[in-house]
Length: 476
Image (cartoon, rainbow, N blue to C red; front, side, top):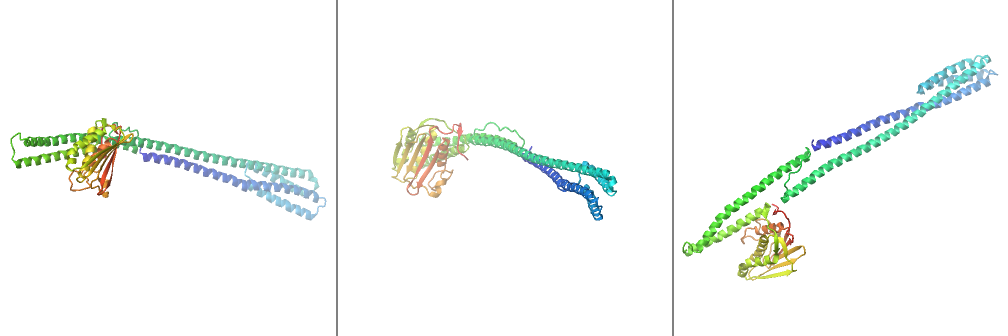
């Protein structure tokens, strides 16, 4: 299932749950309103009217007993009027009665009151029957009021229970929905985070050349598709790396073999093995030899830089004394130094300059940097090579009094084929190779320069030699 479908279904389920709770709440509120409306429009008016009728009946009985001895016509008319009003109110009361018990008692009260009213005009001979009828009407009114009170209490109880159920339902449902949302969000987040963390680790391993096992694909959503795509990419990159190694090996063999043959042939000619050469032939052979040397050096630099960028350059780590490396580099460059009459100084700070590394590659770093210093320092200038024991690191300083580097070129001098000064020869690969070899040992290189005053290159190398991978290199 796609990740978007999972999110949609989870969201839809939560929305439907909340919608159901909302509808149920509206129905419960509607019922609560009906109950309260019934209390306000039926039970309360019924109680009020029932109580009033009970008082009216007592008043009629009292008026009828007080007025009978005189039998005054005015008093009789007043009694009849009050009786008519009570009969009318008693009839109106039925509209406010909500239960069958109330209506039954009301009907009995109507019949008893009608009997009492009829007997009230028959004189004293029916006094006992009249009192029985009035008592019966009063009793039925009392029972009706009791039924109304009971109905009111039931309605109030129902309202309270309905209110409590509504609040409980809304509270627990919202709490459950919130918990479900948090759990679902947590599961989705954990799934995404775990997959992305695994992918991030695999990406780092792939960048370091240490990724060997494919990522496990545990889902069929977008994350699973990304993992499958990553595995295909990693497999293709392994194939490309294999092709690169084969290509570099092939190119190295195909270029070095004829160049070496040309160089050996020129050596044989210069040594007059086949016979003597004329001066012009000797000059041409010297040109061929110099050009072969330059071309072989360029091919070596291009291949080494390419292997660095492809991260397929092997390093043979073993104990190295950097002080001896500096001495070897200066000895290798002595002819150029003496040709320009340069003053070369060596300085050391500390006593321990041992580290783990590839001695030949480190020698290449120092030779390239000192060679650049010699190349860009005018005759009778000065070059200083310093070593500093920095505890867990060794710092190599190559400082000169040469022409310096323009400020706008400092940021790109370590890029391949970039030169701060054009027209002075060179391939523009030397500093790029220096940077790659230093970083392959886990170190870094920096430069400070003032145009017209000279430059200072700082190389910091960790004593443990940096990454322990079999093949290391620089980022393309």
